[in-house]
Length: 187
Image (cartoon, rainbow, N blue to C red):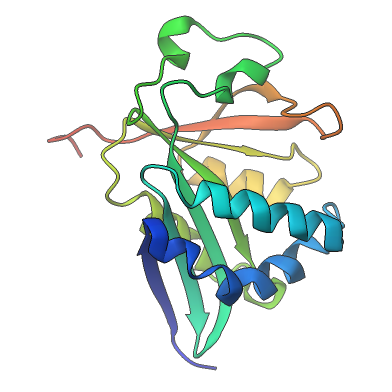
């Protein structure tokens, strides 16, 4: 085993890394509860190519030598986002208001099975959210018990559940999580 290293890519540089981390994506998301097959992976590839063009796009790769052992990426929610519109219980307008830089969204954070519970996910998360000048970070995740380890990790990192969402009719229900970031000049 080598020392784990982390690489951060911004904007179009992130798009160019798709083939580098796609094997890790396929390995993680073939597992239950996701059970993704070739059609799901193709949809992910198409979606990622579009997401890589979003303002604030950032990708962080974790490597052990040459191999990618984990990855995460996200971007700023645009002012016209529908992110908050799928909540089963609406939140106040002042909470869901976006201006293109208020909220950073984590789309994926995944670590290969043999590298889990070694701090890789925490380091990926820290590298992703370090730098964007946002008030908060949001993400969705499967609820417990399906995603109990992830739920525990996000809670330990300071996230709180603000609602439940079903992004598309054929999708499962997801917990919507938010992490308030320190404002400028505050710890």
